[in-house]
Image 1: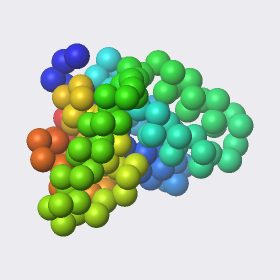
Image 2: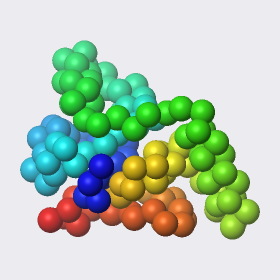
Image 3: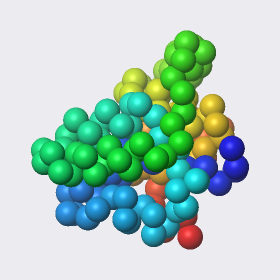
Image 4: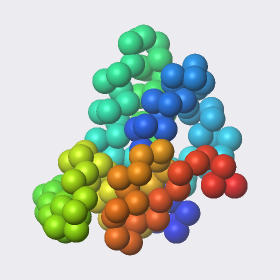
Length: 134
C-alpha cells in the first residue's frame, strides 16, 4: 500500500453529514479513492448514525469501494498492546479510537480526524483537516 494512505475517522464523516454535505463527494475532492482506507469500526460508527435509508445505502456503497483493513486476531493483539502502552503513558482514550489507530498503523496510513486522542499514538501520522491533504 502506498505511503499516501489515509484512514478517515468517523468524526469527519459525521461532521460533514451534520453540515448536510455528501461525505463521499467532499472527500473525493481531496483524495483519490485508492488512497483511502477504512476499517469496520469506522464503518460501524458512521452507518449506525444514519437515519435515512437512501443516505445509508449511499454511504455503504462508498465504504464498499474503499480498501478495508482486515481485522484479524493479530490486529486485536496489536490494539491491546497499543491500548496498554498509551494508557500507561497517561492517555485514557476510547477503545474504538485505539482500534482505529491500530488499523491505520498496520498499513502505514495517516488518520484524518478532528479528535485529539489520536495525537497520543506514537508513530501515527495525524491530519486534522481536509486542507492538510492538498
